[in-house]
Image 1: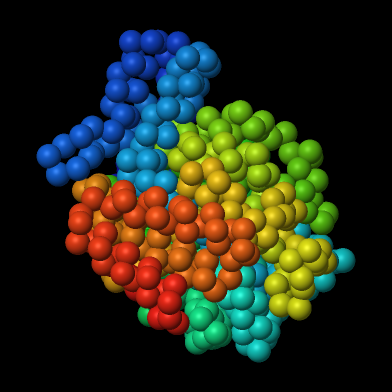
Image 2 (image 1 turned 90 degrees about the vertical axis):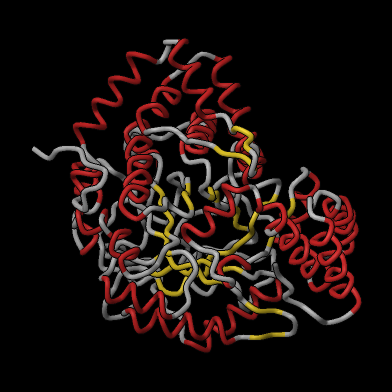
Length: 485
């Protein structure tokens, strides 16, 4: 029997089934233990220090106790602390990105994804490099600066060389004032050699969803194809970090397995990365299973309601305070609005989940024949940007940290020291100003510059504030772009 060891490089030891089951039993036994819960909440709360703020985070067992607790007053305090952590370390900035689907050819048999190989009626499509360029121009014309590229697993149709060519094409496209400055990559688990190639191509974050940490369920949900190999998939982040990719993104697909099990496994994976590599995940995504083509989410028994989803999100924020958290357009405007207060720091906007879903379509048109899942929030990017500002957030198109080499532990150090207000805050305002000048509707532009003027005053250092204000003036009065701290 495998023994739990967060420093092990073996999947069944750092995501240990026995440890998870013992954790869930412990959480159930202590879910109403108020003295213990009070200690955990106090540990989770940010503490002010001489150099900024610090937050110790929670172990998977401590966080699981909070997730199991159903005392209304405690749940509200969890929400309050989650919002406090988010504002302390990330401020009111929300990073914006869009997915770009390159190909839906796939040889896996995943039973929850319409791209599975036995789906014979879905349209299969793979973008040429000219089509990639057209998609990038369409995305730039919306105002996007950051993409997450997606592709099915198919060594013939989507080899690593194809992905690398697409990345090169994406970075090469300069259209009007537009440019994609960061390409995050969400592709199948691969080799150290291929991760080296992705690193050399200048990717941002390597993203790979575990789907489920429950090995027995994992094998049933992935009955065929390379993804069937649980250990190889689960150990992918270690290979990526061995290859020098220090920004990696975790996530599970909530709804496939019991959420408390998934939650414990997710936090254990974050602990493992910290223990082995000295830095935890750059991002954690919280997708829920959604309807898509031949996939009916009601066929799965483990769906979670909106309130449980909110609680999961808040508890992740308490457990892993320095990690970016992502929510996509899978979720409705109402759900996204609530979760933004509970720890989410990145959202997609104006998203299409179809291969070739941007070029040649108006904002109102949506191709459905190659969609990976239904999009619940179908608002345009301009509407999302305006909505964020109306609700007190700063939409950020910033990619400065990645391009200045502030990744991995260097980014985490910036976040932990509290210096993010003197760096990310002005960068967010400058990239927002770019969006307002080049892409925003008149209504969004008016609200946007009110936001910029107000938020400039919150930059702590006088010199940084003065420089940021000067750069924003230059953005407004000239074609100069891409200022950054």
